[in-house]
Image 1 (cartoon, rainbow, N blue to C red):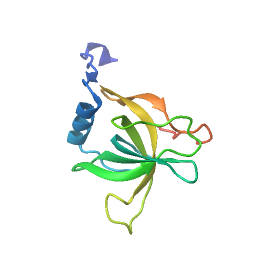
Image 2 (spheres, rainbow, N blue to C red; image 1 turned 30 degrees about the vertical axis):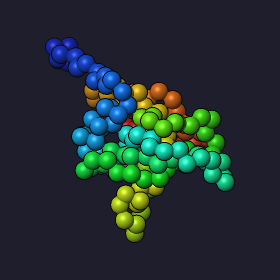
Image 3 (cartoon, rainbow, N blue to C red; image 1 turned 180 degrees about the vertical axis):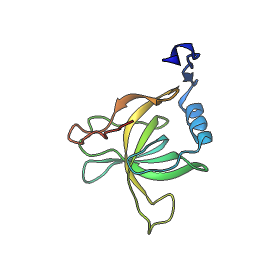
Image 4 (cartoon, one colour; image 1 turned 30 degrees about the horizontal axis):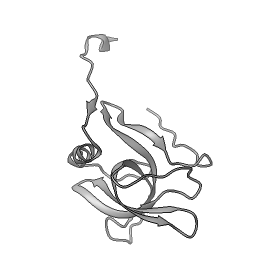
Length: 139
């Protein structure tokens, strides 16, 4: 009820993907299963034998940027290019593999360099195939 009196927070709009990613790194994301972590595409390694596209990405971790190899899923209708600001969806965390290779997931979407207070990064394009169920978030 008293939210009417609160000053509305403005979206943080960044001039480019690199500055948005630098800000994401300064926040210190904790990797969680099902979480979407901001990342920057560094290199396109091409099409894999199963139809997936592989990329070297830097993800925003708890202590800054971490480089890992990731991919889009084979049923994805589009894919990112070098320099894109993307969301990396964590599927599982392998306890017997050293960091950051223990983060198993895929590139789920392209992000806009806009941080919406209380909601997160604005999504631009989904790379998640239609046959993947969306995560249900409560609360």
